[in-house]
Amino acid sequence: FYVQNDNGSIVTGSVSYADTTAKFNPSGALQGGTEFTATITVDIEDQFGHSPDQKYSWTFTTKVIDRTPPRVTSTKPRNNAYNVDDDIQITATFSEPMDPATINNESFVLYENQSTGFQQVAGSVRYDNNTARFIPNVDLRDREYYIAVISASVTDLAGNELGERYRWNFVTEDN
Image (tube, rainbow, N blue to C red):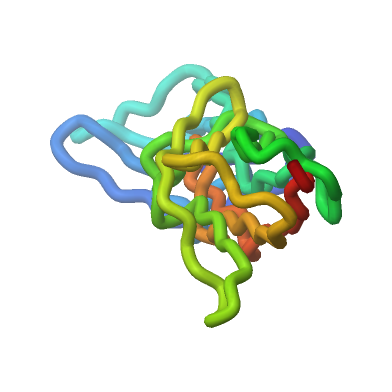
C-alpha cells in the first residue's frame, strides 16, 4: 500500500490494518491542491493466503489551503488626506472577505489628537462586502488630526491574520 503525488514521488508514511481496513498514515501533512494516487499492490494476502489478481489504485485531490494573509487595499479617507468632511464614515476595504467576528470596536479604532494626547473616538463598527466601517457617534471636530487603526489580529475567512497593524491618518476640514 503506497501513495504517490502527481509528480510520481512516493509519500513517506506507515500503514496500519484493523479488521478489514488498511489505513495509510502520511509522515507529514499532504500538500494542498495536489492530486495523489493510492495503490494497493498484488503483494497483499488475505487470511487464506490469496492475493488479488491485479493492483487497485484510486486518485484524490487535497483541498487547497488558503495561507495568504489579507491586505487593506484602500481607505476612506485616504492616508494623509486634508479637508475631510467632519461627518465621514471611515472605511477600510480588504483584498478578500474577512471574518466579521474579528472586526469590531476593539480591532478598528479611531483616535483624535487632543491637547492631552490621543483619545479614542466613540463609535460603532460595521463590516460588509469586504469593507469595514467606523461610524463615529458624533461628527468629528473641525481642523483635527485623526488616526485610524486596524488591529493586526483581524482575520480572513480562512483564519489568516492581517499580520501587522494598519494605520492611516487624516485632518478634518475647517468649517
